[in-house]
Amino acid sequence: MDERDGTVAGTAALDSRGPAHPPNPAWLAERYPSGETAQLRRVYVRPEYRRQGLARRLVRALLDFAAADGGYRAVYLHTDPGVPGAEPFWRSLGKAVCDEREEPGDGRVLHFEVPMA
Image 1 (cartoon, rainbow, N blue to C red):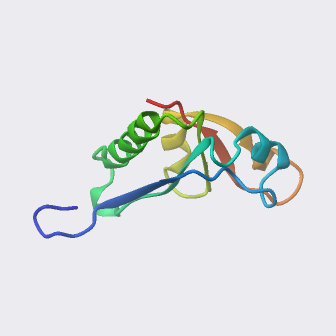
Image 2 (spheres, helix red, strand yellow):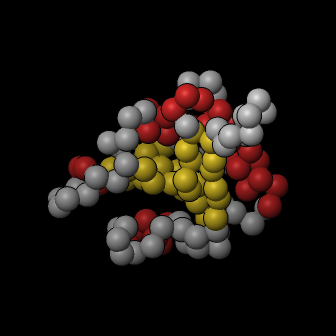
């Protein structure tokens, strides 16, 4: 929240569902099963608040939460690499485990594993 006017500057979420198959590759659903996987979702920062470290702080807070929970063995996310800045941001925090742009078909999704805190 922007303390000056109460507007939402950014948001992020975490859930305990792994990637579903379909639409994701079956091996990803097996590698990141629901209940054992913390999935980062909906990380978004309004344009006027970007490039100030807010997304990184939001993700760090979620990773700390996942680590403190103790029930997760992996943190997973997927992103659209066509979104400006998304791919380099996630590459700075984690490791790409599947790039659907390199697979046959129409896939454009980039899948990552991010180390827990």
